[in-house]
Length: 119
Image 1: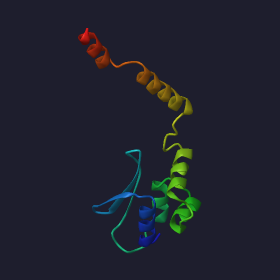
Image 2 (image 1 turned 90 degrees about the vertical axis):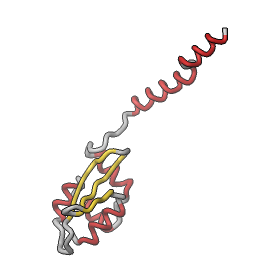
Image 3 (image 1 turned 180 degrees about the vertical axis):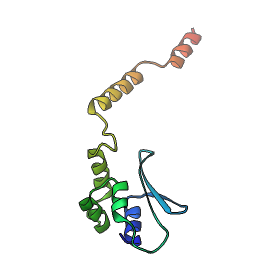
Image 4 (image 1 turned 180 degrees about the horizontal axis):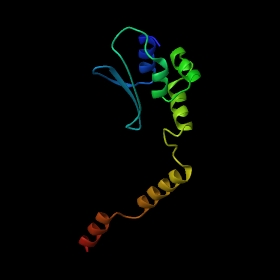
């Protein structure tokens, strides 16, 4: 993998980067670091197989990232299908929505105190 191909992936996936002994890059999803990778600062050929493993994709998916046929949304779906990013359970989402709706209907503790103090 050439250096410019690595940088294309960094840009496409909005990877956060930091220069250290190597160029470090990581993918964040919902504020959490999900995958990390790195490349050397030199202009030589980068170890594509190692970068592929660190990004948790197969050869075809890596080729798609380099050739721009795999988008950021596609990459997130790939990570979800591999269990690297948790897929929110629909029952949990429904439960959270019901919990929020219940909280909105019942007066809060501070509201109850204010009503009591008015008496």
